[in-house]
Amino acid sequence: MSDIFKYGHEDSNDLTIIDPSTFMEKKDMLKFFSEQFIINPFSWEDIDEINKHIDINDFEEIKYMQYDLNKYSDELKDMPDNSGGLYFFYIKNPIIPDMINYLVYIGRAKYTEDQNLKKRCREYFYDYKNVKDDDSDRIQTVRSMIKKWGHYLYLKYIKIDNNSLIDSLESLLINNIRPPFNSQIPKKTYHTPQPAEF
Image (cartoon, rainbow, N blue to C red; front, side):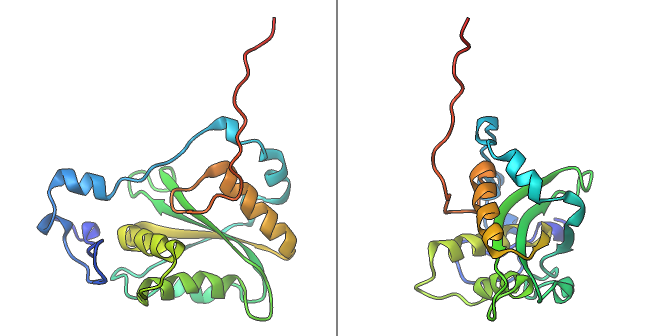
């Protein structure tokens, strides 16, 4: 089997790269690598507000993990440590690169004395490596994301100077897009289509 299909056990703390075909059948592999995406155009209610503040040309892209999944990519070292912003984890499909991508997690980093965009994105790696008995559901979810998709996991980020705007945009984006690894949804009300009046 190709090396790009080697992963660690999902149900253990072992981060060793292994061939999943050695411990699961094909049908189980399909289940293991399945993610649920919610695509509902009636939840895209805040598109104008989001697009007013985010320009796609302002994003930077990096690969998140090195191949063996035991170290983050050297590209993280070039991330800004003098700004906050938003970041987006996504799975890049090697089939027709840059066309078939799957957004799986949205996060924010406020700029404070103790936090910045670079530091926040590196923290996910440390959460992934340092397993604790009292890890939160969010940490466990992100660890699962990295263990399953680390070889294909990329990060796009955008610098934003206004911390209040960072908070509001993250909330709007998660609510409107519902990425599968965002375990907490800020807003849970949805508009439903109404029948047309004649």
